[in-house]
Length: 171
Image (cartoon, rainbow, N blue to C red; front, top):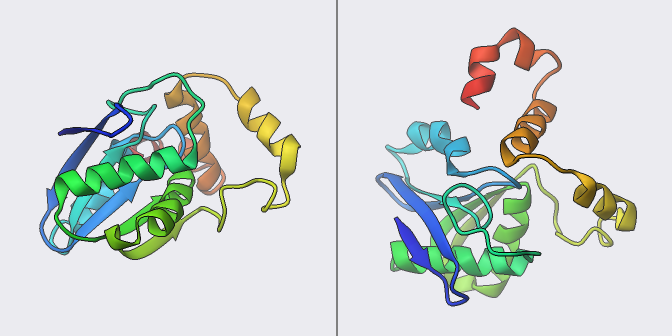
């Protein structure tokens, strides 16, 4: 499904399962398919709303840069289109920053918040990382699949990608 946000960006999303709504916001360069296994595991307990954030998957990729606030507003538009009430929100990595902004900017949309592999602020200065981290992030180039592959490998135990190649490819 798709929703066009007030800023004119088309956001792709899918719903799986039944139960209370759970919005899943993926991290940088990941699309909603990174969380299909999670949705399958939770589908008897939650209605999982999986989102391709702007610039990823099947959502529009307008010329950037994108702010965390943009991602939060996109998520609010998806929630409004999919459900009439608040949802639990799980944000992974950059999606966690968007989840925090969503909770702060649209408090009526968020029933509960789960942050995975993220930080309490999307501001590198507040994290004590400053300009050098920002510069390293923007130097990183490559296809989104390659960036996601590196990010996933970095989150797994050493040798996992080599020793359990089939499972790694599924991730």
